[in-house]
Every structure is written in C-alpha cells, then in structure tokens.
Length: 180
Image (tube, rainbow, N blue to C red; front, side, top):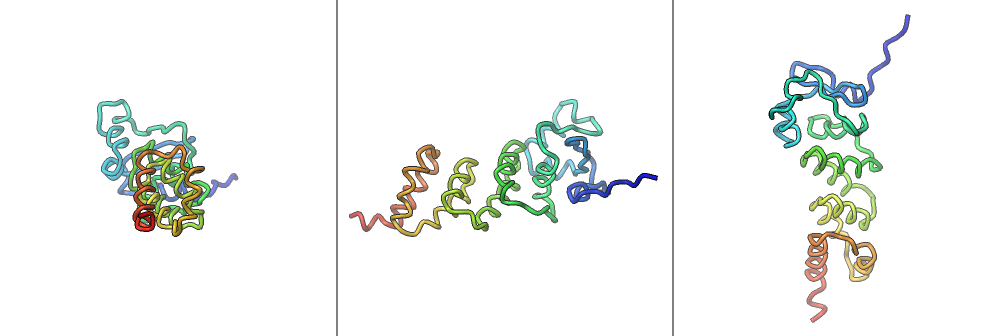
C-alpha cells in the first residue's frame, strides 16, 4: 500500500475550511482561499472574483508564472498565521505583492526587511525599486553622518525622483545648518 505524502506547511496553511470558498491552483497544488478577504485586500483578486471574467464562475482558478511556495507565502501574509519569511525571498515577494496588488503583504515584507541585518544601502535600493516608502525611510534613518551619504552618488544614480527627494530632505534635515 502506498502512503499519502504529508502535506507541506504551505499546503496545510491553505487547506479547505468552512471559511474558504475558492481554490487557486499553482503548479498543480491547491490553495483554498476566501474570496471576500482576497477581494477586500487586493484589486487584482477583486477583479478576478467579481468581474465578468470566466474565472468568476470557475471552481478552480489557475495562477500561472509563479512558484507555489512563493505564492503561498505571499497570501499567508494577510492571514493571522503568516508563513515564515526568508530574507532571500523578500525581493520576489515584493515583486509578487506588486503583481497581485497586495499592499498589506508588501508592507509586511518591508517591515521584515527593515528588521533584518541587511545593510542600509541594500534596504534603500530595494525600497526604491519596489516603491516601499517605509523601507526607504527606515534605510535613511540609518544614515547618521555625512560620510554615509558619500555612497549615494554610486548607488543612487538610478533612484526614482521620489527617493532622490527623500535623500535630499533627509540630508538637509540633518546637515543643512552645517552648510550655511
């Protein structure tokens, strides 16, 4: 007799309950979700579940071009018991939070990065890349003396205008009086 393989933590987090009413399929694996919750927190899922698309009436909806564990982790960030985050996966999760229009998950990942031991320059680059204002502010709070800002000409060349303004404001807030 063959044994049924044990469910992964990702599959367990999205097993069917009396509160789930939709199934998302990623890489052949099922995630049981609550349409109302996802629709409330994501314009992507609101459109998917509530607009006049064929997916609205499907019992199972396939989500393509995403890895199962990444997608399950992303969706777990809006649940009471989020799956554990790994710093190596954070950029992918920020990318997915933008793709699936989940600002709550994006904030959760940005907070995780802010609390990590990642260096301030990398936090600033990631914050700019994903328009994570909190992460940019956090990274800038780690710049404490004028010499810290010397790397800006190298790392900040391609920053968005928004981040460049934040850097300028931060620098002049701390050191503007010294320049006069």
